[in-house]
Image 1 (cartoon, rainbow, N blue to C red):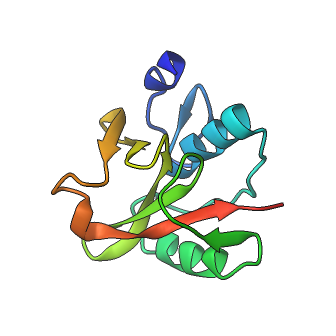
Image 2 (image 1 turned 90 degrees about the vertical axis):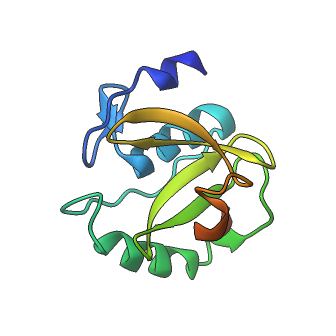
Length: 124
């Protein structure tokens, strides 16, 4: 897991040279579950376009709403908009990346608890 903490933030990045929140989730899903998540690009990771994507994708038959669990993605509101995701490491902790770098958060922490939109798992 240490190698993931070395990844710098890069808008639309999808590899270990740099990634955004969706890029990190893609890397983790591939390494930990062998799942290749669908890709999408957007103009800016902090834009409202992410909310459109999440709303479309969570209604896609490949994404199933679930309880917090290892391998699920967590969708988080930032400034009232669902535009950030992380990868659940277990039932309470998740890994995510921001412009400050990769970190691990806890769904019970006051910074996240009230901003969680939900949890989804991907099924091919």
